[in-house]
Length: 214
Image (cartoon, rainbow, N blue to C red):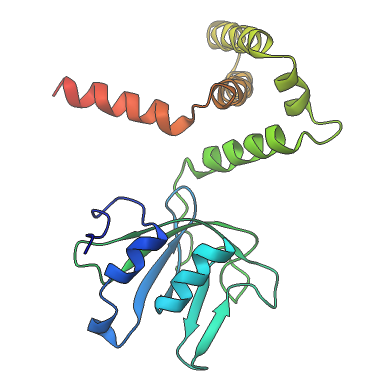
C-alpha cells in the first residue's frame, strides 16, 4: 500500500484512499483558503466529495444537513476553483487552496471568518490575472501585446520601470514612488511568468538566502 503524500505536500487523487475518513464518521473537515493562504470558510468532505473536487476542478462538499454532495456556488455562481489539497499529519483534516469566483460566505462577504486576507494577497491575484491574459490573449490587452513582443521587450520595460522607481525615490513624493513601484512589480511579474517562474519562486529564493545566513 502506498503512503499518502507527506504533510504539506499536495495530494493527488491516488492519495484519497489513504486518508482517515473513518475517524470522524466518513467526513473530513476542509479548511478553504484562497490562493494566497487567506482562510475563507470551513466545510466537510467525504471520499466522494473529494474525488468530485479533483474531477470537476471546483470544490464539492458534503452537506451534513441534506446528506448529499453540493458544489459550492451551484446556485449563486460563486464557485471555488480548485487549486490543490493538502492533509495534516494525522490524515484526518484537509487544507484546500482555491481561487474564489465571487463572495464565499452566504452573507455576501469574502469569507466566513471576517477579513483574513493576507496583506500581500493581491499580488497573487495580479499574478493569476497576468497568467490568464498570457493564456487567452484577449484583444486589446496590454499584457498580451507586451508578452507577444518577447522577452527582450519585457526585460526593457522592467529596466525602464526600475529607473523610474529610483528617480521617484530621490526626486518625487510618496504617491509617485508608489505608482512607479506598482508599475515595476507588474512588469516584473509578467517577465517572470514568461520564463516559467513566479513570485513564489522569488520568495523561495529570499527564504533560502535568509536561512543560509542564520
